[in-house]
Image 1 (cartoon, helix red, strand yellow):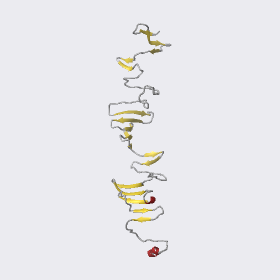
Image 2 (spheres, helix red, strand yellow; image 1 turned 45 degrees about the vertical axis):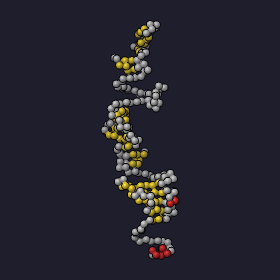
Image 3 (cartoon, helix red, strand yellow; image 1 turned 30 degrees about the horizontal axis):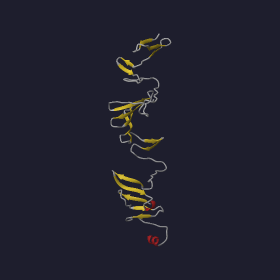
Image 4 (cartoon, one colour; image 1 turned 180 degrees about the vertical axis):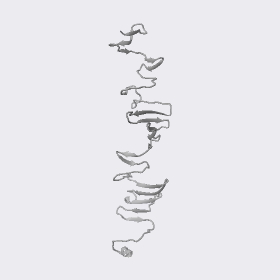
Length: 231
């Protein structure tokens, strides 16, 4: 049969253990469930003081009305250097970890190879620790920070300057730039990050050179005084 206790008011019985068919029993706790003197399930049905949870099946977590952080259903808190989760495909795969560190970073760690793979840094930057960045099966940035593109590279100046900067050890050597509001979108070559171009080519193909031309022989298929002088 069932196991009952008298309630505090002495007016009725509380069923502590309900016996089902055979050896099936159900424990009914009004306050909570303790192991020794330690509560492991409280009166709100929360698991607490759990040392380790081992499950052979799937754990499903659904957000209830009592959750104050609506987008967080699973929380991990650790007072050590990091708090993390691991995912382990133990039948030949790898054990990967996601760790939130005391330095404010989110780390992706390959435990099987003892290697950091990537991290979101405290300032929001994304860092690849090793090897390359791929799009599909194509490397777009390799381990030496060389950028690879197919067909074209687009730079949108948004109505202002669009340019490529060539640096040496942090110092600007050349800006190759164009601006629809400056020389009518002419292609300009500006040295040392200067606001003055050394040379430019207009959209019609005419060159303006603000310096001396040093060259070998110059030939022309055109006619006229300048062409005659060249001949």
